[in-house]
Image 1 (tube, rainbow, N blue to C red):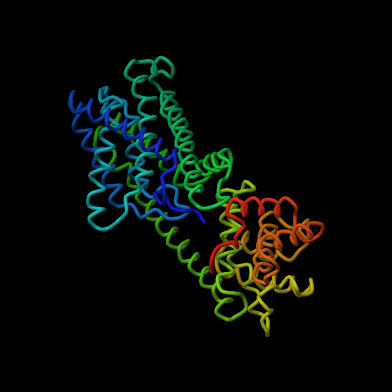
Image 2 (cartoon, rainbow, N blue to C red):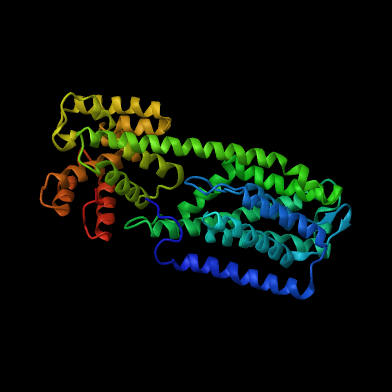
Length: 430
């Protein structure tokens, strides 16, 4: 499973992102301290907005792309700010970066005092993203080039929207880079292609309501300040607070669902139907194989959850199967157990995709989706290792012998590559 940022030695990509953000912050702070603040009232308003957004944010959790939408929208609005109450501003790109960096640092102090973790990678990513937006917008606005291109009428909002789209792409590039570094720390085989991660980040930006709300609020707030002055953010950022509350509740529901699945996965072990740690081992190794085959984002999450729950149907058996190895049962019995397991999964709130994978794990592999093929193969590998067939090499050999009907050859070979990078040991400890 994916290791959190900051565990183990830092990858070169993480060091590069943090180093670039630190250098940019130092330059911005030095320049601002020497020349002084332009429009200190506006700097204070947007600095407080970013700091407040950081203070009220939730701890980032799995699947949560932006835990501080209010802070992100405030930082974007300041980067895309041209006029204030009809008068041109002169704060420039470096002051934008300096104000955002100081606001994040000030908000981190009480959070650390309360024992809440500071995410250095997320802070560095925001510094670079906001810096990119400010560098794209402020010089063109101050020189008048943006007005010559877009005019000062109804088409001018196209300029900040264009900058916003480019900024979103920049953020996706950084997010994919950090995600790949985190995957590298996740263990052997956990290294998905960068292109797949980038596509996944771009799709998430286009498909998540929070990302759209952040961008829209940032642009609207900047345009609102241009007309109404520094008081506009207090009114325009209100809806984003509601979005943040809704996102928090959604995250809480996802956390509860994950805890339910983990408890159910352990139920088969506690009842003696499967060996201790089997579900966790299969989930960890299946996730690594999925990354090896290019799965990312939601598809990888579905695979992980299905691997955790793949044996839940065994609770319908009157007598446990020896070692939990259902592959030794008749095909009809395997399908019955799989269907019962899918019915249980559907009641957990895990989603129909997860239930479908659990239901199809006993079908011939040519009729299965990729996630079900991976679960089937990894489960068989762990069962064979538990039967002491001669070690991991012998277990892989038996899987290769079954590629004509039971296992997809590409999945078996991906499993072999993952295990080879891990020293051909069994998939984790119980």
